[in-house]
Image (tube, rainbow, N blue to C red):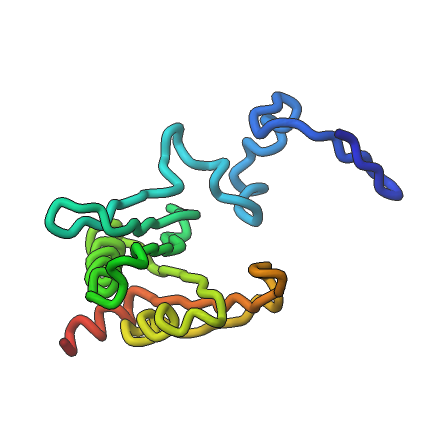
Length: 165
């Protein structure tokens, strides 16, 4: 696919295009761009965990969009509707946050919640996540657009909460 602008041509390619490789090998140049290109081969950008209760899978929680140099990741959690409200999501969140800050040495966790998902909003807020912003009409569902709320938790906030427990 080719897209033309007023001055440039955009030609669809792949991330390993040899004509791009030379351009993106300069670390100083990349420091203001995506750090992913600087990772050693096979560095994960996502870690997915099954949430299990009594040997039954009840959901998943994942750390995605991991940025190792910036020490941050986005948290995503899904608990089966059949078992929601039993504390599995809370326990999975607590364990993943602990792992992220204490074992992975992350500095920041981020999460997005659709505005109407009050349970998820309250869970994040209860655990110390701070709402940072709103992505207006960023989710289309059921024939309607909804806002997505952005949350974050910093490592120093986590350790302060942990020490007060």
